[in-house]
Figure 1 (cartoon, helix red, strand yellow):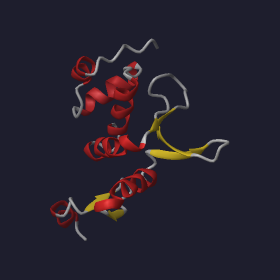
Figure 2: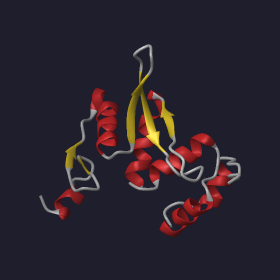
Figure 3: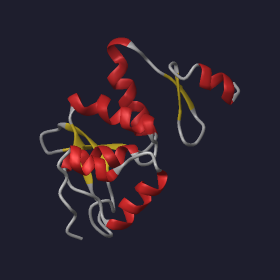
Figure 4: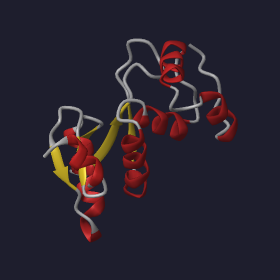
Length: 136
């Protein structure tokens, strides 16, 4: 399928960064489909605890601190919002989602990179979501 055809059908397909194409599953399984797409795109990962519960986590390494492995838990009710952020901007969308959820601005180099993309206005987000400055 050519890129132009995909653009015309963008409500039916998702193209991941490595050009793999996935059909969107609508209806009752929509959230599960979104989780699958986020997993395949390496936006989220699964973890479990001693009780055997499985948790969905959004990667946010090096966003809020330097050389910091980090993740933000994604609640079932938040899956669609995270997915919509990803669809708006594959790279910075999930970062913006984590920023909003934590209510903390990213470290300066990350903030500068987000501003350069001109997709997100961090100053407006900081005001709208009452984000606190990052101490680092």
